[in-house]
Length: 160
Image (cartoon, rainbow, N blue to C red; front, side, top):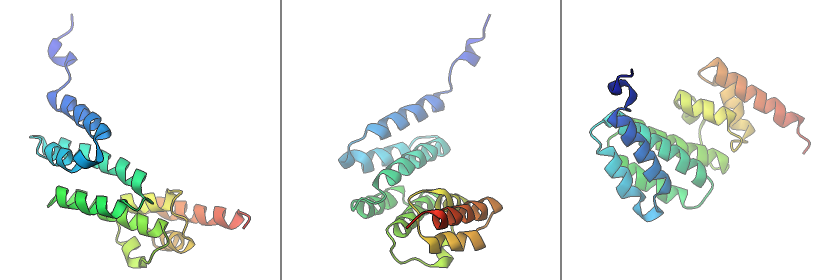
């Protein structure tokens, strides 16, 4: 005999999956409204997790697209005073800057979050030898320094 209380999924898990499903299929014009709606969910941690996954997916899709900047500015307004989400959007913008070979500073890389440094050191869209060099030398963790060093070695072995 099973206890039905343990077989049922908690309501916040169901809402999380529904939020992810809705965010995945949202039209571009409706995205800000839906993100704001999700962030009003009574379970703030769950809502932020769903929005974080959505922002990660959309940012990766739009990274080199000219629409990225407008999208990121809109999403920054929508997430408002939620520091984690605002920082993540800022770090995606910095990844875009590096990927497009636009100006950035070594300090921006070294003060970035662990997530940012791991992503920058491992992501195939970051090809800047200068950025990888900064992370190989001054990355916060051994994992970041190792990944960036490995990417630099691979780049040197590639025929030009």
